[in-house]
Image (cartoon, rainbow, N blue to C red; front, side, top):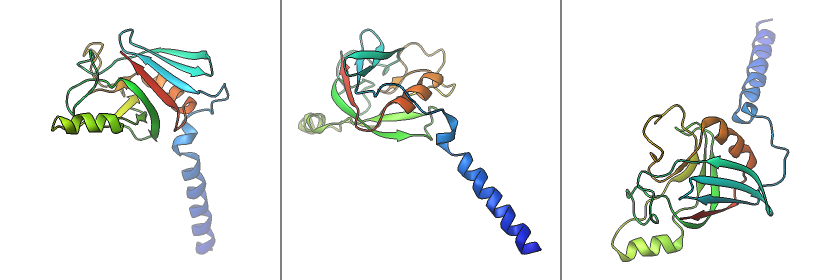
Length: 167
């Protein structure tokens, strides 16, 4: 009897654990495939695009020093150029995040030619209730949206999606 109770209890825990995973937080995205992301730093806008149509538009916050291209670790700038979504982080300190492939080989080569490090860990992420009231550009070089918006973006965008970041 005890063994049967134990097995039923363990089975129930396994079922509960499978229901509580990160993918259970959100309904799946059923819209058009997002084929690229375009970010316009000067406008503080990000667009999710399917082929040639804008599917969603977002207001964004950038690095604390947003003018100019990111060159070095700690410069507070958001990169410019072509990158790719290279990972998803469901346990981000900023609610959810998706990684951008900065630095690319050209970024690394430039930083090394100047005897510096290029930096890294550039993400599109939420706020997680943090940094409210710090102004419009408060990240360390990332692109920030609201927590609700990153939930949508997280499920809409796949690893490998191109990200164009314009001045």
